[in-house]
Amino acid sequence: MAPESSPEKEGVQDLDAPALEGMFTKELSTAFAALGCFNLAIFGATGAGKSTLVNAVFGQDVADTGVGEPVTRGVDYHRRDDGFLGIFDSEGFETGSAGDQILEGLRNVVEARRRSPIDQQIHAAWYVVRWSDRRFEDAQAAFVRRLADLGLPVIVVLTQVPSKDGQAHPHAVELSDFITGLGLTIRAGGAPVLTNALADDFTHAPAFGLDRLLDATYEVVPEAAQAALTAAQQLDMERKKKAVKAVINQAVTVASGIGAVPIPFTDAALLVPNQVTMIARISAAYGLPPQRSRAMAVAGSLILTGGATMAGRYVVTNLLKFIPGGAIAGSAISATVAASLTRAVGIAWAKVCEYALTLPEGQQQAFWSSGAVLEKFRSALSAG
Ligand SMILES: Nc1nc2c(ncn2[C@@H]2O[C@H](COP(=O)(O)OP(=O)(O)OP(=O)(O)O)[C@@H](O)[C@H]2O)c(=O)[nH]1
Ligand SMILES: [Mg+2]
Image 1 (cartoon, rainbow, N blue to C red):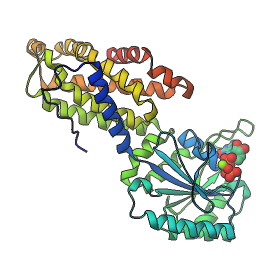
Image 2: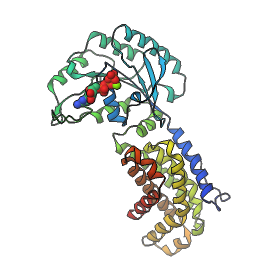
Image 3: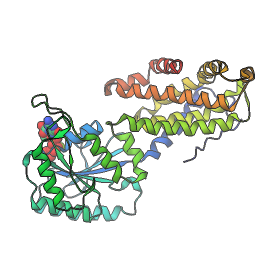
Image 4: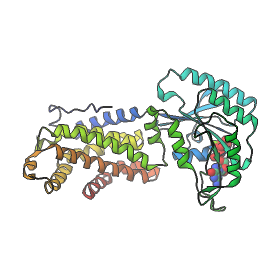
């Protein structure tokens, strides 16, 4: 998507904090909305480990918090507060006649939503089996077949699998091979994904296979829902970083274009709208909660009102050392400096976001509402 924020001189020159805050609020809301929602359907017997798995990958099982919205008999839909994750969850389901009802209801849901916006569709289905049950019954196979017949990309997940030196327990492998041999239309190469969502100190079973499950899930999720998945998942920080890097690179390209017409240093504010968009998109890509938009807007605007001066001066001074004929850049911001300044702001904001993600849930709001954000930003900026 091309950034819409080609800044015009008017309206930029006297950007004060309230004007910037308004701009941030709007851009954050656009960026969060653009992510959409990743929807996962999850099936499996009671105690199979569905909640534990969702917790491990997404940090929290929405299905365990609050009341879901019934979508069909036996299936509830829970959307996480931040809006990036939705879980279709079949509480208390067993195979047999209850399974038939669920499938019938699901067919209606899937068909009705086929023409709906992508963020209302089901993007992946996990069928969860506890390996220690050591069996996979005909009724389970039939259920999986019918899920696949609905057009859902089904991944069979074996849970609570013990492993040693990266090798799964041979009996779990045996069960997995048996399931693979059934020739079900399942994804991840037609084989179950073996996992252990929770390290077990008593049996020394480490967490296992979650990265493979996430990879397999990405493979089946439509591209339009992948940004939401990246924001929603809490397992793989590298994927978030990669998405953020792409956001920064795009903003840097835009900034070079702006700087190609040399901007007098006092007008570095011309670069600000592009940086606002960038900061909003970075925040969204990490999956920071939209509920904190207000605090983020305040923090962002403080950074950028200071930014044209604080961030700007810092980067310009430092770049002068490296740019041939740097004296010119002292009075006019060239494409190179515009790009570097924007990149530095993007990277520093990314570090602020990553720091926020390490904080316990209860401390995050306080962080965003405090001067600590500015401190973090400043130190990230000078760390380069
Ligand atoms: N060690 C270990 N224990 C697990 C794992 N998955 C689940 N458990 C344990 O198994 C029990 C049941 O797990 P849940 O995740 O609640 O199962 P569920 O499928 O959500 O069950 P329902 O919500 O009742 O349908 C809990 O006590 C978990 O702690 C795992 O991967 N490793
Ligand atoms: Mg559960």
